[in-house]
Image 1 (cartoon, rainbow, N blue to C red):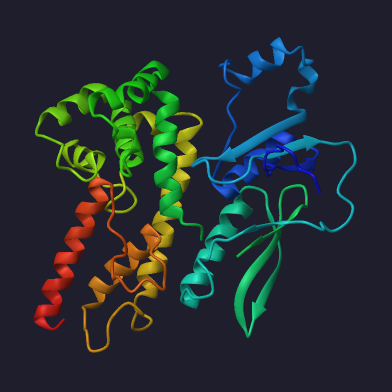
Image 2 (image 1 turned 30 degrees about the horizontal axis):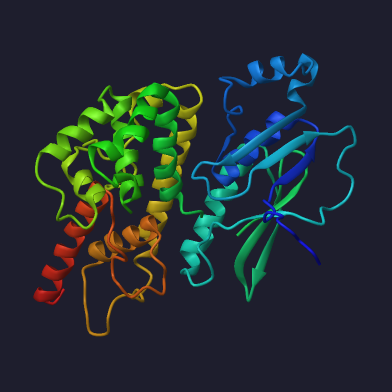
Length: 354
């Protein structure tokens, strides 16, 4: 078939419903998405709809959500007059357990935790599906009866991704624009570095507390030469002080006070932090259930250290097949510091024989 210069199609999903804003909020929570901001050039949806002469009575006829991290399709919700009458031929899977290679008690805990969160926001549990007697997934329905399955997202990553996004919505846009436009002037090629997203997230998060991102960047860059650095952004991230308070995990920052008080982001981030803590408790409990696959034959570690490592692997998304005890090197300052601390504890314990 002749395709000419056609571009690769971009996937988008549309869900018919009776109450678009409500169902959009439900699925934003379920997927770790956010309500999409208005198109570029407009500060609010009301302004956009007014200037495009959309009648006020039609403003709630649709809603759009998008992934916080930018990874995944946008989902639109469209008001339709007819109700849902039959079973969906297409449904969404919320892959939250980490896969069948995860220890079953932890897998089930993640599924049940997510299901409880969704139920509290209007979902209805329909049935359990088991494989060889073990829970594989839950079938649920959203507030309007659309089926979904819950099969725990990388909750720590979702929380960590959401923090700088939330911060960016509350920081002066000119401040953010200045950082993005002038970063490469401070250090040539900085925004092309692998650690730039982590450095940028730290700078934006600090900006919520009134610190100027460009000033911090320039100060850090002037401390010492960067020409010999393999990744200048990673070096600068070490020089810039991240929030010192502990968040839901030791290496994850807490919610800044201004975001906690924000009417939109405050409840969302607090719920995410609570979910991280719930999953962390489940990981620690599962740490008592047997010898982990990453521990080499003959090696012995104290149960509390095994729990710390299991929590680290779950919280940073280390693949179960990765035999590196702590997975890949972390780029964020606080995460890398905690990773090095664990490395030291493990090496010390192995020298002592446990």
